[in-house]
Length: 106
Image (cartoon, rainbow, N blue to C red):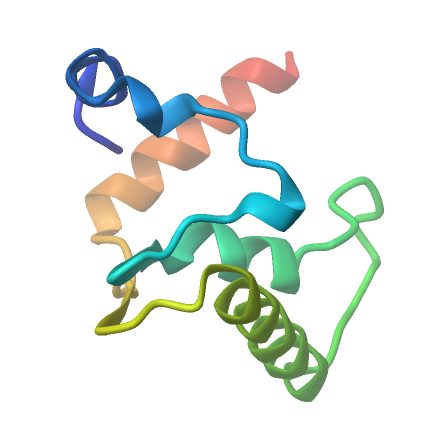
C-alpha cells in the first residue's frame, strides 16, 4: 500500500536521495534496507504477459539470492543489511485487489 506522499516528503528534505551516482563513484553506506516485495515479485513473475509461464521454487530462490548478491556487491553496507519481507495479505485485501484487477480488464 505505501505511505501517501512519503517519497516526496523524504526527497524534499534529502535532495541527494535522487542523485545519479556514477558506477565508479559509489559512496560508502553504513546501512542497506530492502523492501523485498518488489524483488520477490520480479523473481517469481519474470514474464507476467504469459499466463501459462511457470517457474520452479528453486529457480525463484536462486534468482532472489543472485539479485541480493549483486545489490550487496554494489552498495557494500558496512554495518546493517536489513531485509523487510511481508507476510501473506489479509483476505479482505486480496478480495479488494482481485476486484480492482477485474475492473481494469473490462
